[in-house]
Structure formats: C-alpha cells, structure tokens
Length: 238
Ligand SMILES: [Zn+2]
Ligand SMILES: [Zn+2]
Image (cartoon, rainbow, N blue to C red; front, side, top):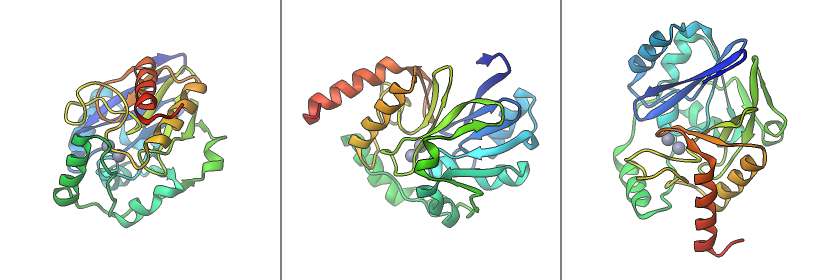
C-alpha cells in the first residue's frame, strides 16, 4: 500500500503478520511467532530493506506469538522497543501469559495453550513504555502519518496503530485466520469482550476503515460493525 511519502508492508512470520511502516524511517509492528526469524529476514530481503533501517519495534501486546523473534530482530536491527506500560513485564520477564477464550473453540485453544505452548523467549528491556494518557495523544512521528491508540480488551495493554488514511493495525483486537475463526471478526481470545467492543467503537469514531489483524488477511471495518451489533444483541448491552 502506497501513500505519497509513506508505504507499509505485511511480512508473515509464522502464524503472525508483522507490519513494516516506512515513512522517513521504518517502524516494525510486532516481532512474530517464536522460531521464525529466518522467515522474517527472507521477507525483508524480498522487500530490499535492511534490518538496520528499523528504528522502532512497536509491540501491539506481549503475547508470545507477537514477541517470539524480538530478541533476534532487536539484536540485528538495534531498534528501540516500545509497548504499553501494562505489557512491559511480559517482555521483560520473557514469560508471557495467554488470554482466556471467549468462544467454545477459544476456550479449548486457551486450555491447550496453557499446557502445550511454552516457547523459550529471551527477556528484553523495553525502551519506551507508553502510558494510557500518552497513547491518547501519541502521533507516531518517524514520518509515519498515524497514531498509537490504547485499545484494551484482548489484553490490558493492547495498542493499535491507526493511519490517517484509515488503515488500522490492531494486533489481536480482530482475528481472521482459519485456526482461530472461520470468518473475519472479533477475537475469540480476550480478557474482556466489553472492553474489546469499547476499543473498537473508539477506533471507528477515529476513522478506522480497513482492519489489519496480526492473524490473517485484512478486511473492511463494516465486518466489525456487524460483529459489534451481534455481540450487543447477544449480551443485552446497547
Ligand atoms: Zn494476543
Ligand atoms: Zn496473536
């Protein structure tokens, strides 16, 4: 996707999408699933972009599948790391937890994950911890026309990156991958679905129009709007 002096790219890394935002400098959103750093490097090679061009690694949240290659990517790029303050402990301990399931399949996955998914992660120091107050004001800078928005619900410190042109990179605030859900929509794993819905209403109010999840392909915001209506009908909330 190209803007006048800005472009972004999706780089699949294991079960995840990382997104590379290229303005005056380069920002990487998320650091992929554990054990797939070679896939990330092949993606960078295909784009003809050196890892040393990455100035900032912005983590949508601290789950293992989003910080799995952080140690290697940060070492190779020497980029700084930023994430919401509520998530820093997961990265700095190298022992992140999992979100609970919301649907039946989500609950099964979360249960299996608690037993079977224990990847080895290297603790990393976070350079910039983003507070909730700061995220409501935070332009990205780096020549990237967008801002960071605190969008809790999947996990307490989940953040999204909303571009001025309406594309929004949401981590796991939406999902669109066969192993999670068969159609695009709201997450099947979440700490608090009411907060998920509130976060989405905020993003929609700020102009979000095309959703780029960490799992699966992008899709239009109208799908989320229908999902919110269905959720509110089921839960009896307005
Ligand atoms: Zn997650
Ligand atoms: Zn994830």
